[in-house]
Image 1: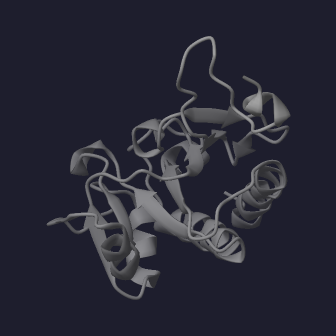
Image 2: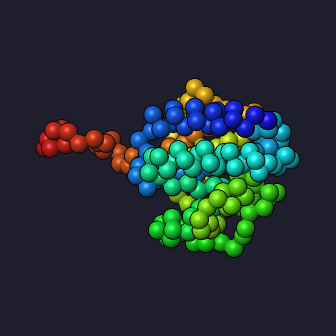
Length: 188
């Protein structure tokens, strides 16, 4: 496994994501990652702390550059709980849950993030602005409604498929509703 290639793959994906998406200041960016899938194996069968560290460090640096905060989704064995800095969790009013990630219950990326964060905590539910799903980890439950896939030209990290999401406010109303303010909004 070429760790530098994984980092390069992620940087290409994130370059395009942040070019296409107006990421909000202090926005939450959720990361779902199967290090096994990156290595070309089935989820949960070949977890790697080394790969997880490369993923976390690369994405955390890029999200920080865009004034965002990162949340790392764990695997099904911890109910897809999310690891984040305590300060971020508290500022959003997220409820902490009692679990600590392990390589086969949380995953390589969560364990690597736990080791590198200042004051990590796990929470059960968030509403992120957007995020990245590496290897089919299903992050949609943690991205606010309405989720929109971001079409990218680079769609892999190692051997894993990558899908990115952003969100937008719901369009509400009926046939008279308008979604941008113009002079037509003032017509009687």
